[in-house]
Length: 160
Image 1 (cartoon, one colour):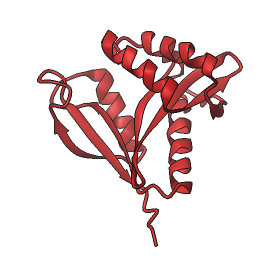
Image 2 (cartoon, rainbow, N blue to C red):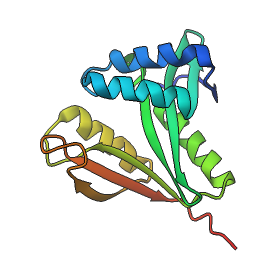
Image 3 (tube, rainbow, N blue to C red):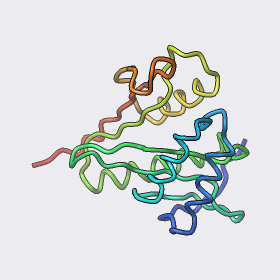
Image 4 (cartoon, one colour):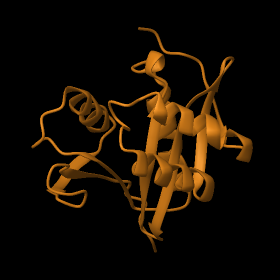
C-alpha cells in the first residue's frame, strides 16, 4: 500500500472524542473499557499530536514525559484502514524529533509482550522494532494475563 499524506499538528481540545473513537474502533488493540477511559484522560491532559488527512483525524500519539531524560508514547492509534500507510511512522518520527529538540535521551513505549501469542501485537512489536526501539524487559505490570513489554530507544541527545 502507498503512504498517505498527513498533516501533523497539536490536538485541539474538541478532537479528544475523535481520538477516543479511533481507540474504540480498534477493539483488537484497545478492548478494555477501563484502559480506554484512562487513555481519554491522558489524551486530554498530556501532549497529544494528531495526523490529519482530508477526511479528519487519521491517528494520534500522546507523549508522557517521565523526567528530563525520558518520555514515553502513552498511546498511539491509527484508523484501521490506514494501518501500514505511514501514519504511525510519521507520528513516531515527529515525536522523536520533538524529544531530540528537548534533549530527552530515552524514548520508550509499552505494548503486549510476546509471551502472550497475539498476531495483532506481533505486528505492533514489529512496527516499534522497525522504528528503532529495542526490547528492554517483559514484566507483569498489567497483570498475569497481560505481559507488558517495555521497548526503549536511545536518542543520544547528551547533556553538557
